[in-house]
Length: 101
Image (tube, rainbow, N blue to C red; front, top):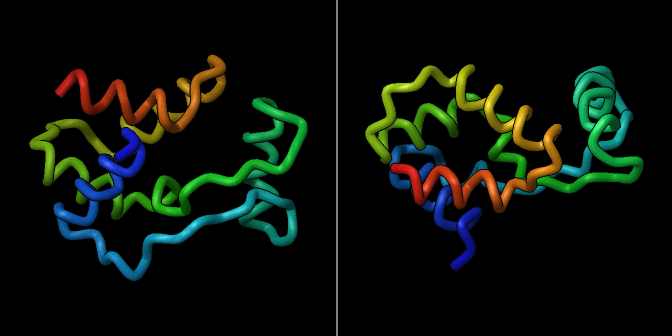
């Protein structure tokens, strides 16, 4: 199981509905995607596919519950974005979360 799969499983264990787990392709098709794509375009000049769950604050709350984090949801999301801007990946961020908890 990858670190990303482990984190997603912990989000589900923390109460995130399993049926909401899916994937999203970041393309500027609507207003919400335009905002996300604008941020992500700084990371890569191609379509980026991420687990949709990583864009949902409720998933981060569930992860915090499952892993006993005392961090605010916004803090975890900002760390993820900073990690991606620095050239990291979702997998390396998940690895960091697992190994540092």
